[in-house]
Amino acid sequence: MNNTIHPPPNQPDYNNWICPDITTYWKLSQQRDSSQFILHTPDNHHHHQFSPPEAQALRYFTGHYTVNQIQQKLGETLPPNFVKQLLQKLITLNILAPEPSHLNQPYPTPSLNPNPNQPHLKSSLQWIQHTDNYWILRNPEDRTFLQLNNQTKTVINALEHLPPNAICQTYNIPPNQLRTLLQQLAATAMLEGTKPPKPRRGKFTPLQLLYFRIPLFNPDPWLSRHVENLSWIWTKHFAFTLSLFLTISLIIGLHQRQEILAIGQKLITTEGSNLFLPFILLTLLVVSLHELGHAFTLKHYANQVPHLNLQVSEMGLFFMFLMPAAYTNTSDAYCLMKQYQRVLVVAAGVLCQLIIAAIALWLWNGSVSGSWLFTTSYLLMGAALFTVALNLNPLAKFDGYYLAVALTGINNLRSRSFKFYGNLLRRKPIQERPRDAWILAAYAPFSFLYLQFVFGFILYRVVGWSFANIPTLAMSLLVLWAIYFYFPRDQ
Image (cartoon, rainbow, N blue to C red; front, side):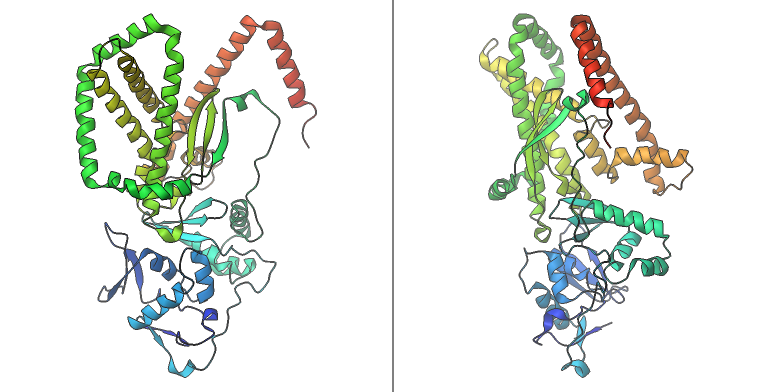
């Protein structure tokens, strides 16, 4: 059951020794309803508990990595002697045993990349194992990710000690398949010397005005300072209280729905366009709190896996149909190991909106008809419910879409659904699980029809209004844009 490590950890040149392969005799699994991990024998007669950072390090105990290389892969957030202490712990637990015959012999430093010209992974990359039987390869420097199966992970790890032609022979992979994998790794900046490609700046099209982003700042330091003060939000007691509050509010709202609709019609009739600016400002407030819900939830769960250093890397403004709103980059949520955590990160924004709508309903019921509080709380309730309806559409890339991704576990749901039909029509093999294939087959037609309807309707309305109200100017602008866009073409 014991592996052998030579020499023992008290030797001076310790950083250059290879950590032995423990996968033959030991298996690593996460405890249910806990962040802790168990290293156990296949028959479960022996088992030992380890923390998440230790479990992350143990995944590199495959006989290919030195102590120093594993330390580098874990990042700078852990103590510099973390792997050394882990090795000593394994020896103390009798999982590893030093071999006396090698006590005075330095263990050779492995040459993971004998040819410096062959592709190899960056040392900062992190492997994250999900309970859904797939892996996430994370590049924390460039904020890029790849979702991979076990076989692909094995092939990628082999890049560190085998040349490409040997990998093809060893794992029976066609050269073009390995070439495609290397292109994916390069495009996501996983290989040494690569950077994420900059977005191609093509010629301007009017559709670019429909959706664009303006990044403003990195909120992670501010979130780190305040998230601990809000930890009570993610407790079971608060979840129960919140569920009760929202249920009572829903019952009241449904009971008053006729009155609510009547008040809305009255306000539109009497105030008209005067409500537009207050409604827009309240919508911006709701959306901002919505984004903070995403950000704080990700930061809360990220603190439970400190060795990954998950972050909310960016907040800013995005404009859709020239209407401003806020956005938050929570792509690190893909790295959370538990599905319910990923779902809650996505759902947190909508939950914030529902809480705002419920509070506004109570304020509206408690205010005097015709007062500023009466009108403001009603508009706030309307803004919250409007944005909830907009966000929950799974066919547009808002929260409803990402909630569908989190619930199904199918990342890049839209692109994979279109690729599914592309492979089907070209009679290429479908490399999807049967369950995922049914979901992709159902999603793609609805998504396609939705996109055609939205953009077709917008184009029809814009072109129709332009030629009806400013025909000469509209025609001139259209001709000038066509000349600019099509002649000459970019090389």
